[in-house]
Length: 263
Image (cartoon, rainbow, N blue to C red):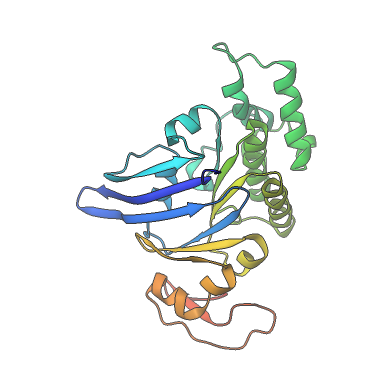
């Protein structure tokens, strides 16, 4: 019997007196793309950190393809695309350098790149359409190109599980389409992908399933079911106004921080 790609069982995490996750439970099968939806402060980033083994939960267990998160990360099984604000874009690294980081687990103590490492990086850069930018300092890329560079890092790494934190925030339409295509290709190749996003409109086209999180998993199912207005209201604690939108599978609007957002 195949192990779940991601298994989160009754995970609880506290930051002092604040409970970030409360008996959160999630099971993802291999080769699936899952969208993680929740308001700011709902525990999405904490869940990512627990899955990557960066935070040890106060209670509960996590397994990545049957392994502990620390073991899966050590063996290069987990790739991560961070939010833009979590990266120092002024650091003097080229795009190739960033993608080569994905090969560190395949290299020895000296981290000297082999012919196989260089070939894997070249292939990953070509796959995300960044080959001509390989020598450019990473901070000189556009928002969408930066996201694609980190996707390339995961590809070069050979990650079987990838976590993406707001991959469509601040990206152009071309990069959004390229990233969506890449993620679908990676899933077809057997990679399991968890995507944290506020872009609800894109979820049905990108994801096989979706999760609503508010410190615990409120709902997990097909995107067109999870994104129904009454279900979103549970996660966001907001009034959801229904209206007809013939171009979308999901009707309604939601208000976040005083702004009305169509979805």
